[in-house]
Image 1 (cartoon, helix red, strand yellow):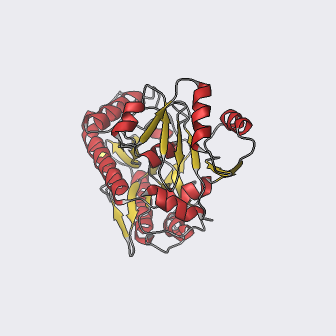
Image 2 (cartoon, helix red, strand yellow; image 1 turned 60 degrees about the horizontal axis):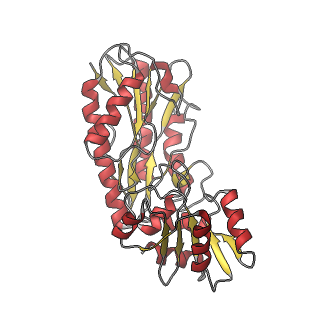
Image 3 (spheres, helix red, strand yellow; image 1 turned 90 degrees about the vertical axis):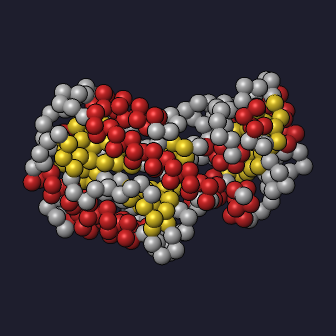
Length: 360
């Protein structure tokens, strides 16, 4: 199914060669086109064709590819891998590659072996194909969101004065996995107090005090698909300023969600929330885009921003995540995941609370 959509977007019949990287540098498109649910497949390859695709696997992971129903060939050395790739590409003058993910060294070794071939970067066509989620992909993302929101609900009961950001992060990871997540795609953000002003913060030894904002940005994985959810609460009684920050963000989130539907330009969704925040005393404190696609990657193409020219399409799955950040004081962000439908959006992450939650 994914292959047919890709070749329709590509507009010509040439094979696509995907070479997976090592762990931490994997190409998610290897798993997108193969449908393999587990395994690492370091330095393995896949040739995607209209007439059928082939996974070229090492011996460690080959059985996982067989179980996924793939046509599999097993290599036993670097030279053997290149031999098998060359054999799968026999008869083609032009080959597509994912230039966004293949390493320079790997590409050069392949090009040296096949100097008579034309290699074309088709990463943009791959990205466009992945924008629209199949019903199965949507179900995986909905499941990841349910796991995420349940984990956050449970982790609120573990919060206590004096705990560190890192300790709460550990509780959050535990709850995600106990509720059915694979290992988190990315390190969850957990920030207390003034550290909430950093949109991309790494949890540390800062201890929780009464009156602190607590910002958590996290997401479960399910069948490799990644949720992305952010919640902000306060430990103890909220101040008026904290409530005002949250109210501005909450209203911006609702406006962003209301703006989402097929045919709407990305910039319009961004503006819908941004103008609400900029109408408050927190003007200029929303310092990033309104959201982004999610899927096999936590930041999947495309993203919302003031200059986003893309049109939303039915089946896209996007985040809506406005925020307010005040250096030295703290920040508030609320993030939900939505499926784009023809006339509206479907929130699949439960929806952030309308008012700032006080945790005691």
